[in-house]
Image (cartoon, rainbow, N blue to C red; front, side, top):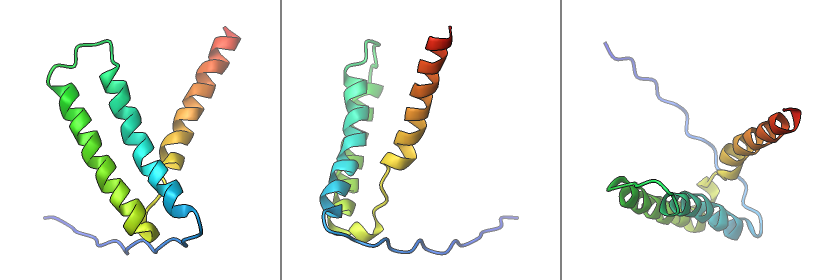
Length: 99
């Protein structure tokens, strides 16, 4: 038996001046960073590399459209992706200094 629970939709965020362009920068930065890492990878990616780059382009366009035209529903991903990455980098630097 499957139990399905409907979640309440997330409320719209307040829109302030400059949020649209900052959201567009955030929307394009992460997919471009992932595509850059895949392209510059020293490993042979085979067919997975171009597929990942194509998906990054698709996600960048989708996120860019939401950032520009549905800005009240756009959520910044720098907080959800950048903070854990910065924490890992700080932990790695701390371990390197301690060793």
